[in-house]
Length: 373
Image 1 (cartoon, helix red, strand yellow):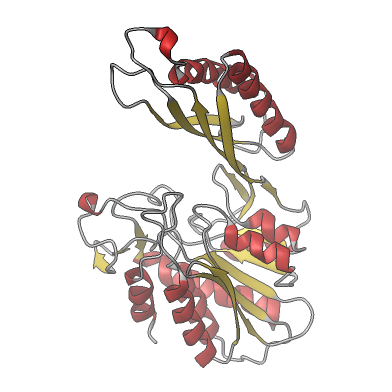
Image 2 (image 1 turned 90 degrees about the horizontal axis):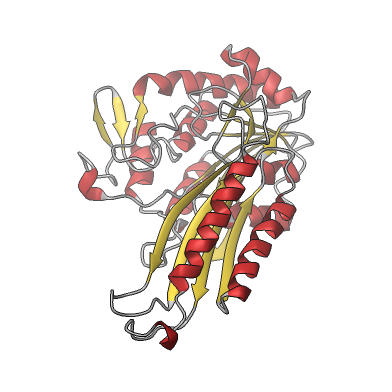
């Protein structure tokens, strides 16, 4: 299958992952498409079923110790089709760009990786090449966590093709996504004693979180453009009418911690503050959390050094999180590098510049050659 045909079919497949069950989709169609394409090229195919029409793909060419993983996630974030100038599920070429949901983040990486393999003059690899495709990176990291639980794949090094403008990234912040629900008691607003207002308790908790945000700014890391942890209040919902005491209030917020921070202690501090207020106000509460650790590559990383040499760019840091810490936990030397631009990811009219396509194929072909030949 030609590069553009493969990308068009991958973009066409809706693989949105979301914490909202009404819009959450499976990625199995994308996984099967990649598995069939790679199988025809001689890769050994393993599909790791995760249930709910979701799966990981581990496609391996060659055998032996060491080896290189080219990794990425097959899911996308949700989108508002009304804000797009073209169909987000149709690959559209204009302005020397490929538009489509996932073209940048990061479905576009897979056809380029496959094309790089196809361009190799000699496919008798001395060390294996593994193309790894995962599920639910945008929502739960379920695919990456399943890989860690299974203890595979095993390889010496890995490149994750997230959008970095083809610059090697050796360090990134983590992310802690927190979903807090406060439950009080509704009642007629004419008499506050008839209920227990959950929104008032949430207001106090918001103040605690903002104070925590100010304290966290004192922690610095010179390797990041935004050199301190950040806390974002992202979504709040509560009550149902002006004349009813608010019985439930929901808050979703996130923290982006720095490498070296104690995430378990940070999580414990959040829960202590929430519990203190909830107990004083006689409220019930629940807290759902997703913690993705920060990533910091080895100081003497061979794959970072190789990517620096091949691209001419020094290793950098970014504020967004990836699956890198999970592959690192599997024992791999990891770098994050891909052709897209994070500034257009998760946005209407997401695109991949056409002038990045051939340079990325050339780079990946060289990387495979150095790592596997």
